Image (cartoon, rainbow, N blue to C red; front, side, top):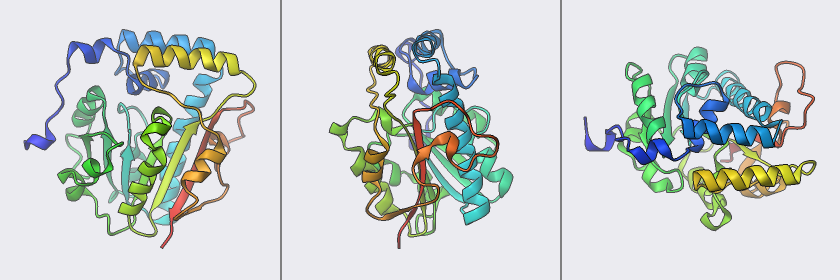
Length: 271
């Protein structure tokens, strides 16, 4: 195994400090999480009663987007940034279920997520996971595993699902989006989802965010749909139905009646 493909070694700090990836895994019913993650997740869900519904709606949005990209646009390459802990309904399962030729590269900074990803994908030659920080696009884009698995001269889907709200404005999420945009071929796609301010429950949301940030040591920034639109106004064309709540993006069943403060979009890279 080459040095760049080593499975990260877990430390006591990795287990004791709550991780956004593992908290998300717990909310989705996964088992790759620890007591510290579950404690933060339960407090957050208690503060915001609609939180779990939003998490599940976001996961369903990811599944619909991936299937749509394969079946409607013929996309067979996926770069999943901030992919998190492997759980049911992963990108490679959805994409390869629709077209077995699909190739998927997962990218995450959490060593637990990467370790479980290596185990899950051991027998899948068309999917891999790397330990890298999406905030440093050059590190991701120049990784040997990406070069082996994906061809960026052909259309690829870049997935940024429920991850950019962990990146503060001081780290310029707009520039991060643009760096990946500039690296992929025209005809590629960007799928993005992001938490938004809850105008109906601002105090509860603030309480949840304060506790989450204090526990994980990771920032969490809610942004409006207009802010997301600013990131993609240059070089992208947003697909219908636009920037909408994730449960309103091409729903397969009756629309959810709750207002879920998570927005999603699919945008095509212009030529």
